[in-house]
Length: 259
Image (cartoon, rainbow, N blue to C red; front, side):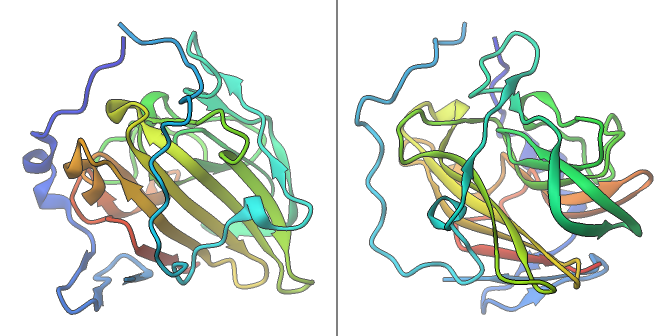
């Protein structure tokens, strides 16, 4: 049985805010090294039987790319970690990057990602159960270079329109590798929530773009603020925290991680 997230985490980590969105929409990146902006007993897994909340009628978020709609996209296949279902606590096999990507000074040709919004580099699979990480980053227990895209305990919907997709778009030397977690839901807001976000790796510049297109939890509205999630990146003893169990990552947040 998974432990449920406690609201007390807001107080616990209130002192480690690395970057906040000001009321006027301007970002205060501090020493993050990233450009940030804001825009606009376990039940068995089963399809949500048509209960997916309807998508809001809103313009597409600038910076968000839906890999599931790109030509040649692949819907990810996950392998279960421990005894949980692969659509819950899953990780892909090691995948080939379409172009070399430099992360914390090291050039990588392999990557992988998890159902819980984590993307790592190298030949060694990693991630964490329930999307957990300690704050501030770097979090102990992660031996692999990793991006906490939107790291939280997520369940992948089983409907055909949903899932985690990846695709390469553009032409060399300016291609983009996009991974999109589409229409997942929070474990602690089973079926009644909807979470969609993407991570884009940019060839040549080695910039990583993260965009939270949707974080909708009508019956757990505090989840929508980001206080149950971790956003940041780390490799070895180096790490950068954007938001770590804090209400700093609502729907519409875009983060640009510079090399």
